[in-house]
Image (cartoon, rainbow, N blue to C red; front, top):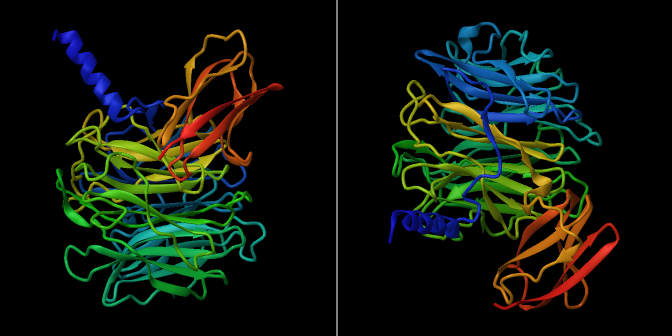
Amino acid sequence: MNTASTIFVFLFSLLMIDPHLHSQWSNYIIFPSAVNQIEPTITRHQSNQQILFASAYTLNLNSRSEGTYFSTNGGATWTGTDFCTGAPAQNHGGDPGTIIDKDGVFILTHLGNIQSGMFANTTTNYGVNWSANVSIQSNVDVDKGSPGTDDAPASSFYGRSYLAWTYFVPPFRIVMAYTTTNGSSWSPIINVNNGFGGNRSYGPAICVNHTGTLFIVWASANPNSPYTEDYIGVSRSTNGGVDYTINENAIDINGIRTSQLSPWTIRANSFPVIDIDKTGGPRNGWIYIATTSKNLAPAGNDPDIVMYRSTDNGNSWSTGVRVNQDPINNGRNQFFPALRVDENGGVNIIYYDNRNSVDSVDVYLSRSENGGNTWSDYRVTTQRFKPRSVAGAGGGNMGDNLGLTSGNGKLHPVWMSNQPDDVFKIWSAVIDYTTIGINQISTEIPGKFSLNQNYPNPFNPETNIVFNIPAAGSVAVKIYNSAGALVTTLADQELAPGQYSVKWNAANEPSGIYFYTLESNGYRESKKMILVK
């Protein structure tokens, strides 16, 4: 076989492993710098979804702080600085959290440096000026603050902002505080949980639903090194964080906490992430939690991303669903999930993933449009990198998290990568989720509307549907069962002229005959397909 043929076969084999190997989206560094930027977080403005506020834990030799970065045009351009100037500037110790409250005040939460504890700073002019540090809890060892705000106008606590963290002394419980003054002052410390069976509580995450109910989740970890995560605990408050209903072992997991994640020597964890559907749609109020697990179904014997959901306000939780769609037990790692339910009700999870390389990772997006029943994977990164620890961040630490938000039909992920110069930067991409499941095959304008026969057919469980659009307009592709009932909508959006393809994964549907329909500009065509399991 000649060299050209060998290269073709290699590339073809990669595409067979992963049909989305080549990222659809341009990647960019949000704030180019010579300073290491890790542990990114991002949020958006409640009323102006073009306004984004991101932060990172920044390290430059012996100096540490929080970078604060702002975009007013949906991520097209950014301003900011790598070191927060809120006085005293020396008391900024990383682990940043970002809030934009209902009044448009930007709140940055972080660890102390010269003084231990949790602190906050505020700005109303995109970081030109910052308030002095406001002490939330001081002179104690703390870890991993997680912020959130009540953005539900119907809530009795609308505008109240929250911060949860680990009180890092025995029994290592989760505590929280809230502000009703735009971050200028905070409530006394409130106990969230009491620990379970001697376990330690790590990595809280926080979210508020459409009625103002506050949820705080955390990893309940074994008390002995390496402190493997054993359960996910859930607390719920209906009175603005004052009192809680607590379930210390709501979800059984088997975490990956280690300082030696193979094949790298980096610290990893299985801290949970949470988000809630607040769209007003058919899954309004559903709660989603994701974490990393292994050696416990549905995860394989290597780290996988697993999602759990509650459809009854957190009273009960589903069995786990394996999110990443690479072959199970293939020896590859998925870790550090970030979760966002977008404004259309899609469930989106990003994470690090080395399915395409033994020693280097990409960022992948897994997306579900049916409440987490089925998932599709998409490579976000255009270049992968080799994980490594960051000098000054602690033993094995490359950072503990990624970030994700959405607005105006776009997803905004943030991740850390040491490409291209071995200095960690915060990278992002603008992902149009309204067309994420649709691939444009050709921009050549077809002579007429047409709907091709799906392939393969019969199929199990995934098939491809190709269609042609001769004129711009609203396009809908829908699936019906043999009784004529709508099963799912694969596309419902504005499209330019061209040829498109869309996939349907019917893993959760029974065998049988189905019909798929193309509707656009008064045109309607249907074809039959057969699912055989």
